[in-house]
Length: 46
Image (cartoon, rainbow, N blue to C red; front, top):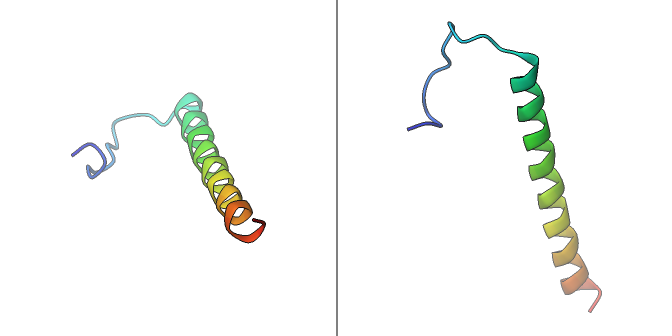
């Protein structure tokens, strides 16, 4: 149940944690864009 727990107000939000989450989200978006690009290349430009 790690993903569905409430935020702990006692835990400080440090810059390192925010930077890690930003980089993780950016990596996921780039990965999904690459998958979409390859699918479009494979389906449309056969």
